Image 1 (tube, rainbow, N blue to C red):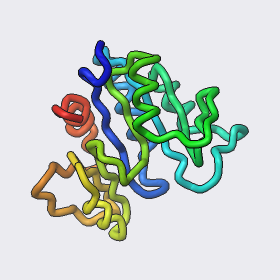
Image 2 (spheres, one colour; image 1 turned 135 degrees about the vertical axis):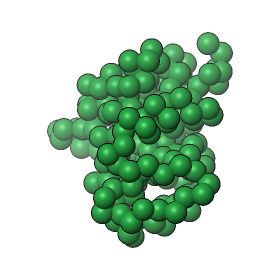
Image 3 (cartoon, rainbow, N blue to C red; image 1 turned 45 degrees about the vertical axis):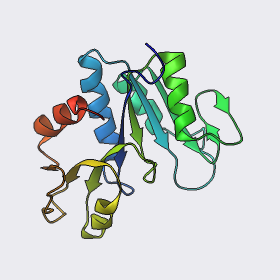
Length: 172
């Protein structure tokens, strides 16, 4: 596979405890079952380097079927790799060239330019709908049903509809 050819990247964004990792696990499992070589990247957005002695979402990603998984925060990547700074583009290139992934789930990195699915849990989360490149929104029962005209909106419990849609969505 040539670099950049057939690579699909989908970001999962939302605020803390909105279900990003749970959704990532389910999507990784489904995509792996469909024969995709799945990678997962999580942005550690809570300040500081990720702590290595705590249970990690990247471990959950790996257990769900990801070929390679990492967590990044302040330039430290937990993939037996440490660097002064590592950006998402560099991690994606590493995954594609070193591990031959063709679908990568990115958890976080709200300001990056890849296509996104947004998780909406509380009414204050509505501001996430202004992010760029949203392909779908998934809303919790605690969120008033959003009025989506530019992209599909799914109820959280409707996994049978949104997981296959997100995995097969062209351009993700």
